[in-house]
Image (cartoon, protein in one colour):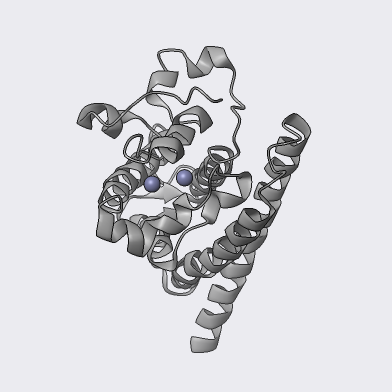
Length: 238
Ligand SMILES: [Zn+2]
Ligand SMILES: [Zn+2]
């Protein structure tokens, strides 16, 4: 049993690491094509971003691997595989609930980590990316990585979700983590500046967090930032 759990954790770590290298690598390549100078003086920083991110891959992979094992072998979690196991209207609702709860957890832990003592201990690593690059997607100090790594593995015990919708949540999480740090906006200006854009976080919003630190704390949605008065709008640089 323990060997199987260990193998599952190791396999998941490998998957998270490859997912990171593929997604960050692809968007770093796009950045290079779009803004050839952006990475010019950031070689040392990028090496550190990759190092921290690969350490985070293990921290993300271990709880995910244990839960994946328990799901397969012990019937843990509320992940389901039959499309009609729950009403069909619930299918697209589940990922929204996941993203909202993840965002809520992120917003409040992120705000805490901007208190000076916590910042030095847990969050300074992430802000050492100045400006951030696509490689900074998982560049977190291990303590911060732990706060992020437990969210989805805990939620799957509480909120039912179809396995394909869980895949969608992980896809959104990965894509936004990478693109929010790459230094340019990939979404059309029209969308970013629309009424809907006023509620969504893309690179223009998160870049401002990396410029000014004490604002724009959210992950996917601007809901908490707007509610709590910490939303300072979009970066002028992008
Ligand atoms: Zn960031
Ligand atoms: Zn921060």
